[in-house]
Image 1 (cartoon, rainbow, N blue to C red):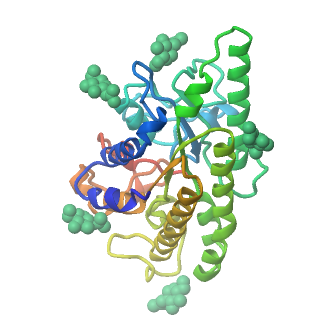
Image 2 (image 1 turned 135 degrees about the vertical axis):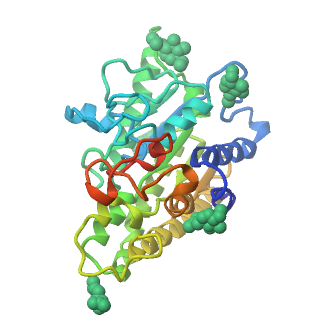
Image 3 (image 1 turned 90 degrees about the horizontal axis):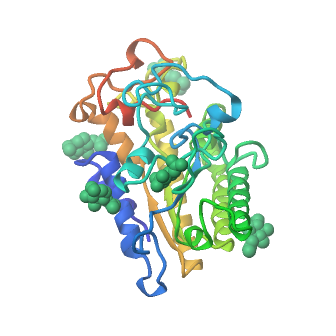
Amino acid sequence: MSAGAAAGAAGRTLLPASVLLMALELLVLAMPAAAGSGFRCRPGSRPVLFNFGDSNSDTGGMAAARGWHLTRPEGRAFFPRPTGRFCDGRLTIDFLCESLNISYLSPFLKALGSNYTSGANFASAGAATQPRDVPFALHIQVQEFLYFRDRSLELIDQGLSGPIDAQGFQNALYMIDIGQNDVNARLSNLPYDQVVAKFPPILAEIKDAVQTLYSNGSRNFWIHGTGALGCLPQKLAIPRKNDSDLDQYGCLKTYNRAAVAFNAALSSLCDQLSAQMKDATIVYTDLFPIKYDLVANHTKYGEQTKICSLSFPTVYSHTESDNSETLGHSLD
Ligand SMILES: *[C@@H]1O[C@H](CO)[C@@H](O)[C@H](O)[C@H]1NC(C)=O
Ligand SMILES: *[C@@H]1O[C@H](CO)[C@@H](O)[C@H](O)[C@H]1NC(C)=O
Ligand SMILES: *[C@@H]1O[C@H](CO)[C@@H](O)[C@H](O)[C@H]1NC(C)=O
Ligand SMILES: *[C@@H]1O[C@H](CO)[C@@H](O)[C@H](O)[C@H]1NC(C)=O
Ligand SMILES: *[C@@H]1O[C@H](CO)[C@@H](O)[C@H](O)[C@H]1NC(C)=O
């Protein structure tokens, strides 16, 4: 099924986290009741989440892996210190965990202070689908998951405590939010038509990730489309010849067109996978209208400036408010 249309329409009046939760409810409703499985269906059990992606959902994985000490303004709007998120506050996935009453998802590679009883986060800032064999491409993130799963089950087999048991893996929600870096990298040196022609191998990697997870027992998937790439401060800060490619909200039209085209292709892929995997639930959510609305209607969400960002001065600078958390994400 595709929840994109519903979530997109609701994005105009609700905050993004609420919109995503709506999509989650659709996912829960879509679970085959008779199967006796499904997200949060076991009485008394906690939901389990596994997340794959880039900095849109990296809760500190890349910083831990590279030994990066991020500095303020990262984290200042909420935690209130840098946490390894490339954001001044919480990410969408953090709001999701709060709504599910589970702790924030621990990065797989964060050795100290992590707690994997609610799942693990494999998302890594800067990650793409291609090339597939480099840290921390989607393919590598899936391999990390398989390692995590085998290790957890092995510990349980040995009578030790593993964070997630076999049923936990089967009932878990598997989230994927990736593609932004692939699309952006191509847009920076190719004309639009050639960029769109490069989508199939990116989508093939996402398909491969879902199929690998499925063949290893995953059944509940939530795939996120990419955001309004043409509104990213990182892109707007690149010097350009003139402003003819800017739309009425000051976003780059070509980047946004590419994001919309990518999402349309990703949505079709999800339909195709749903048709093939009859006992799986695959929900696709189009994040483009949600994120574009955040920029276009920024004042409605309490933002004075259009876009905030951590590393670009002047027009793209930060504002401090609760909503800058969801807007504030700026690196990829
Ligand atoms: C989370 O906890 C609150 C307060 O205890 C409760 O109202 C809400 O239903 C819980 N949400 C979920 C998804 O369990
Ligand atoms: C890990 O998280 C779970 C659920 O959020 C909690 O019940 C448990 O106490 C935590 N374990 C540690 C060691 O903090
Ligand atoms: C799990 O995925 C791996 C990697 O694709 C694959 O080699 C393996 O056969 C899968 N396991 C099962 C039980 O299908
Ligand atoms: C603006 O720049 C684009 C190329 O980036 C060019 O095609 C177009 O003709 C320019 N428009 C004006 C008015 O100079
Ligand atoms: C901004 O909000 C208005 C009113 O809610 C809505 O009609 C419009 O579509 C929104 N703009 C975008 C780009 O989402």
